[in-house]
Image (cartoon, rainbow, N blue to C red; front, top):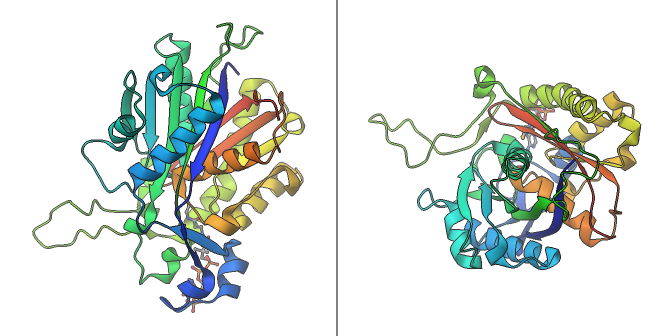
Length: 329
Ligand code: COA
């Protein structure tokens, strides 16, 4: 537990699309969506872009951390749905916020993206290659959702979340000599076909590439309900902590039933599993930092609390991080 989150921020598009509005686009209804997913509404980008949302979330996180943009030496953006391939979204964010000293790059690990970014930053900091990193999860999933497919379009939303992370001020990894990287990541490409999206700019002579999210919902559900409790136990074992010692489990916000199933399998009360998917839907790699930011801004996190973050999704990919909250609540 040597990397500390120093500040958080988020940005959600102005337009809210509720279940009633979505039922005018596809054959569905509020009752079905809420009972199967817990989602009531989602925010959809109109004027906003991945870069503009990411930059706003980043500025808010820097302000919260009281860190100047110039101090950031590593800027990682996790996204699967940015409007641009080149330059990478992270470089455009760098330009927007003036993080002139940062090495900036994007990563794609779908809904596990923020968990992966945290591990990458932790590794760089531990290796002495970075001191202060800015991590952003941003999605404009409305760009790649098929608005005629009721099986998928009801689930997703747009938004960005960001966090500034650094080593302990005294440079001593965690004050207790713990130098383990507090993260567990897994991938299984052999099951990748259950959640796919072809590159919309890709070319095939037969025109068969369609840049839409396609998903086997049941398989994804089973995968998440089975693997997330396992990866949570793995990270706890690595950190030498018990499930009971964790104050909050900040899970990727895909579906309330998945969160419920994970809580049940870990035998932990659902009150330790905060959720905001009712309002935002599944924002993929942005969901964990958006939720963290809300908890932080609403004073629900106390210094010293142990948090487990977990993500899961396309790849398949899944993973968990453990951290000690360092900001005074
Ligand atoms: N509104 C109304 N009916 C719908 C619907 C919608 N939006 N979407 C599907 N249906 C229908 C199906 O056509 C099917 O009808 P049929 O029985 O007449 O064939 C019925 O509802 C059941 O469909 P099914 O896909 O089996 O439903 P489900 O209970 O598995 O719920 C999901 C579907 C997508 C909500 C659920 O599988 C899920 O949440 N999976 C995880 C998805 C996820 O989180 N993905 C991202 C991971 S990062």
